[in-house]
Length: 175
Image (tube, helix red, strand yellow):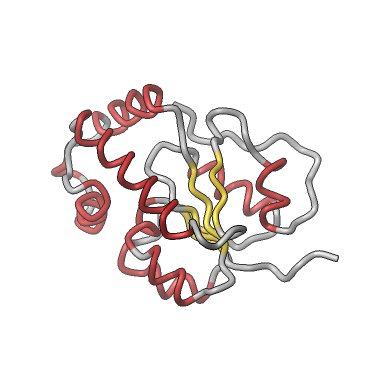
C-alpha cells in the first residue's frame, strides 16, 4: 500500500542537481516545476505537486506550514565541484542581462548577485544547517540527496513512499 502523494519541495542550492531532481519527480508522476518565478511560488504550490531550486528556498518555512505533509529534498554536492560549477554558471551571462526577479532571488538566497567564492562557501554551510535545523525534530520530512555523487531513486522512492522504478536516475544540466 503506498501513501497518498504529498507535495515535494526541493530546497537545494543552485548547481546541486535540482534539474535532475525535477526530472526524476516528473518520471515518478509528479507535476513538477524547476526554478519557479520567485513571486509565484506560493500560488504554484497550490497547483503543482513539486517545486525545486532556489526560489523555493525563500519560502521554505511558509511552504512547510502551508503543507504539513510535504516532503523536502535538500540536494547537496561535494563543495569543490559545486564551486567550479557555480563559477562557470555565473560567468555565462552578465548581471545586466538577467531578469529582475532572478536577481532578486539571488539576493534573497545568496545575499548578492555576483560570484564570490568565499561568500558562497559560507552561504552553503549556513543554508544546509538551516534546512537540517528546520526538520531535525521531524524524521521523514527531509531527504538529503547527493545526485552529483550518484544517489537517486534508491533513496528518493522510499522517502516519497513511491514504488521504485527500474531506470537510471536522470543527470540533467551536467557541469
